Image 1 (cartoon, rainbow, N blue to C red):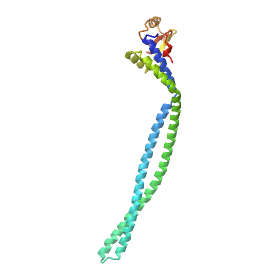
Image 2 (cartoon, helix red, strand yellow):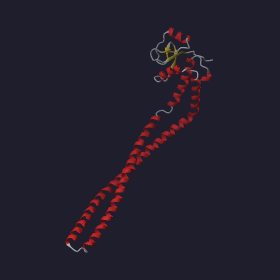
Image 3 (tube, helix red, strand yellow):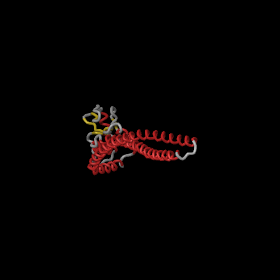
Image 4 (cartoon, one colour):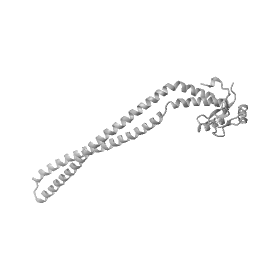
Length: 244
């Protein structure tokens, strides 16, 4: 029966390394998914921005056409009034109004012509932006599908790993776990065996006297002076119930 923290740390390391192996099966999928998401969000923002501008342009076109209709009707009304005036002063005033209406009509007509061209260009840009966004979205969905397939295949084993990890952690104190996790932040194989008088993590030589201490003091943690990994003797026994 296991009774030393070192034994449980070795079991924990084996469980964590198996989980690392499973995560490695995803390869660079997580990074690709993240990049695809960011790219899609960027393209989607361009689409929304173009749609907003296009909506403003189309609103302007509608208002301009209405303004042209009103100016045309006003010009026709004023033209009829010219024949009903009683003096030159009234005639000149109506003439100025007609000229202003025509001037506004020509100005708005030119703006409308330019805006129609702008609308056409925006429609083409929007179509291209939507296509690019759809292509990236399709790529993202394919990547997420691949990710889900791997995750589904791993699901049962991951549940076993989580259960085993919880069972092991219950046997370890907080301080020991902190030491292990701190080393694991640097080395995934935070705890390694001593084999042929060497650390199997960095292959540095371990003095014979230190090896004897490691074997005879399983209630203490010894680390490699070169790489900092926790060391354990090659013949350390681990109960099968803690090994997946």
